[in-house]
Image (cartoon, rainbow, N blue to C red; front, side, top):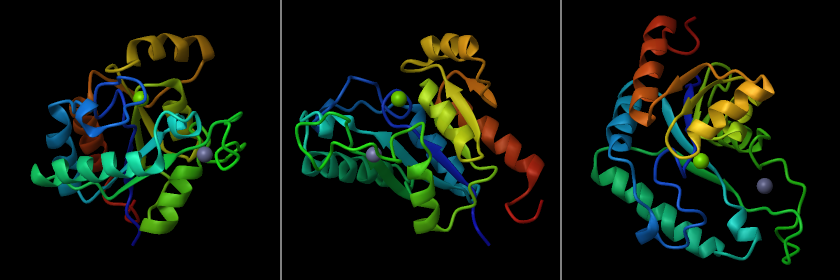
Length: 198
Ligand SMILES: [Mg+2]
Ligand SMILES: [Zn+2]
């Protein structure tokens, strides 16, 4: 039986958005994030980070820098008893000086490439899965893979709420932060029952 997932944006959702951090010591994780992930783990949901990292294509950090950041992020969550089932990123930047990253890719949110890749790797049911993020592109991404997108008001969330209204894009829910988003998701799971038994 395939599991549903909660996809999480990184900057502005899990941690303070400082713009293209190139070292882990620049990452400040929101205190509510650990408990939120623990609760989602306990509910049997996969928790998968999906992050646009055009800073690689722009030459602000390398793939090695990003791997190091994500290894430490996973290990800090693990130390707090929380499991990240995967971290997927888009390194591309149209117009990059490095031809390796200069691409019209299908993995930059709001395009659903990262969700599809994670679903294939981890055996996820995308329909009815969740996406939590602070930007318009996160909400559009959640809709693009057939999921339930939740806007958090941390990071760029307040400005994104206004932009979503202007654009007529409606998230499934708006939550103050990742902790409240996780609680809303757990309520939906209790209503729906596990994937495959609806
Ligand atoms: Mg963000
Ligand atoms: Zn990409």
